[in-house]
Length: 325
Image 1 (cartoon, one colour):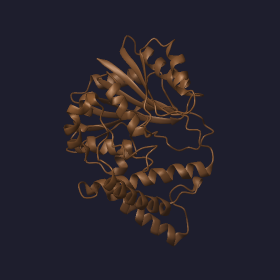
Image 2: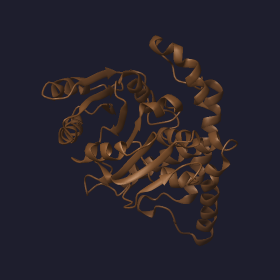
Image 3: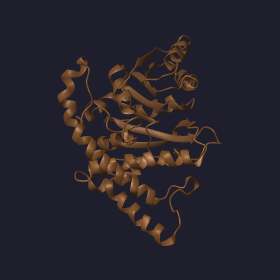
Image 4: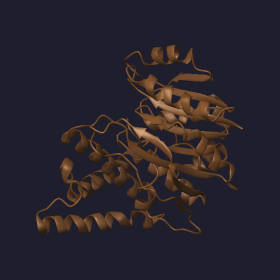
């Protein structure tokens, strides 16, 4: 079985080697293994591609570098899906580093699967001087399946992150590509991983969080305004998700009602009950979610609801379109 580790990057010439080092070290720790590293340069304006090429010279594993000029994390990941040759796909981000045991743990879990599973693990703070955000440190293994363990938006999103996500290609072939309306670099700013999780869940696949598949996140956000901006983007993406699934799977949208109730409590108490460390409240969360829902509706009226396909994928366009919504 071939494994592909996928990393999308943009303007990270100064730091991409450290992320790639961690991937190579984790692969080497699991040797012997048939693996490749797929790097999608998403329109960098610096020397990111050159840095990757220089790094690849000394890598014992094949490195596929592809430049995707169209902006957006979902766009880059879809390009990676068309480029990667692996049966098992791992997604991480260019400001993350895999633990040395990550690949070994992934292969151990994958070997015990009787059907494809979309799996994610813990995300720990890489730099302790960064704000304690964008991390997942739950120590309990958790599984969600539509038929056996019903989940809500919060239970899915709260435990699996796009920077630490692995799945079999067989799952991708059923679920389809990432929705290019979502994600960093798009007008909706985030949510591409949440949307993919929901689609896999609704398609009957199991989602699993395992704490010992660890990624260290060096996100570099140290000040309140940057943290506020990040959660603004998260909330816009969440609102777009609510708009997409409201009529088809309303249970996934219930947390918006919870947030609305908590925002009313904030108005009554005069306190920030969500994230005072960055000045982001439930009131902000609800307001930006509403903005995200409006943006989703406007964007969806203008754009094709499936990603552009190259000629090699044209035969699959109909089936991917069917799974898109």
